[in-house]
Image 1 (cartoon, rainbow, N blue to C red):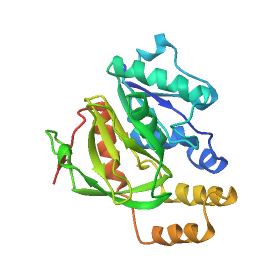
Image 2 (cartoon, rainbow, N blue to C red):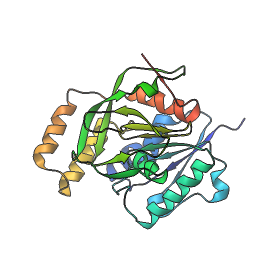
Image 3 (tube, helix red, strand yellow):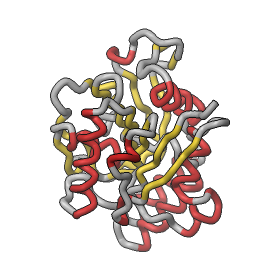
Length: 248
C-alpha cells in the first residue's frame, strides 16, 4: 500500500551547519513529521522551484518553512508562492505554515503581515492556547506550550473567517487556523536549541541584532526547554488527522 505523500516548500537557504548536521531544513522537518511508509519531497521555492499543477494533486499535505525574507515583500518567488497557496486553499489541501510560512499563508488568504511593533522575539516563549482550540479531538494538549521563536515580523490581521488558536505576551497571533485544512504557527516547533544558537550567531554577524540582546537570549535558553514532543504531536495530528486539539 502506498503511503501518504507530503511536500516541504523550502523558503530559505540552508546554513552549512544545519545542512551538515540535519540534512538542511528539509531534514529537520522530515525528522519531526515523517513516519514510516510516507514520501517526503522538497521544493526550493525561494530558488524558483515550484510543483506544477499536475504534481500538486499527488500530495496529501504541504509544509511551508521559515525564511530570512519578509512575507510582506514582493520578490518574484514570494508572489508565485502566494498564487500557489491560493490554489492549495481552493483545493482544500492540508497546509502547515511555520514562521514565514505562517505569515505568508495569512497574506495569501487576505490577511495582513508586517514588522512586529515589539521588535525581535527570540528564545523560548510561552504560548497560550485559546478557547477556540478546545474542540473535539483525541489529541489532548495543555493550556500553554513552550516554543522556540525567532522572528521580527508578525501577522497583524487575520484573513476573514480565520481563528486565533494561540497567543503570547509579545505576539497576539501565535497560531491560526483557516477551515480544517490550513494552520499557521509563528514559532518554530521544528527547531532545536542548537539551531537557534547558530542562527543567533549568524544574525549577530550581519548586525541584525545587538550583542546584549543575543547574550540575553542565550542565557535564557539555559533554563528553558521547548515542548518539542507536544508540538510534534500537534503538527502531525493536523497534517494527517483532525486539526483541533483538546486542552487539559
